[in-house]
Image (spheres, rainbow, N blue to C red):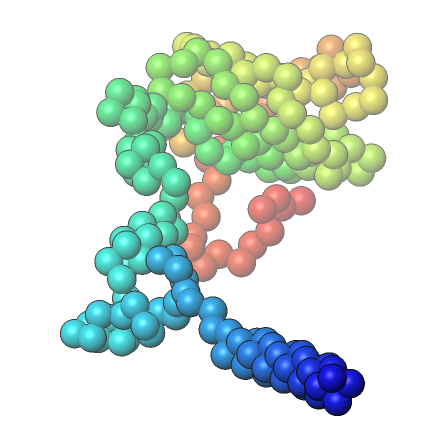
Length: 217
């Protein structure tokens, strides 16, 4: 009876040892053979690619996006942008008036330059604007002085007024009548300067290749 108990105990130990070894082997095998199975939305593009499709072909939706992108490289409002350019249908262009241009006023006695005028005149208007530069007829101190014309009144006679001095109360003017479209004659006067003399005012015409300075002295 004693020998039988020892044998039985030893057999149970061997069975447990074998069971533990088998369990460890099975666990190790399962860990090594674990495989991740891709779901419906997983996998590479190559696995999902149509075998009949050219690998270099761009998908239609990407082509549409590219075409839309390139189309918008222009002005964001191409149609409105094109319509906004060019002259307006109702735009009216005004012709230049008789006094439009550059003029030279000189003392009639010796043709000494009094002043040079650039006049901006629209056809049919009885007034104009412009600027001046003084000549030598009123002395060296005023020669070269520039500024805006104070007044240009155009009618049967034309009056051009300007002030080249630092005196706000002073005013120079010439009163003119037409000899032709390009030549006027008249009188120079001043508000506070007693000097007065006869003048000629003649249109200045420049050749394309004329190298002369805009104003002569």
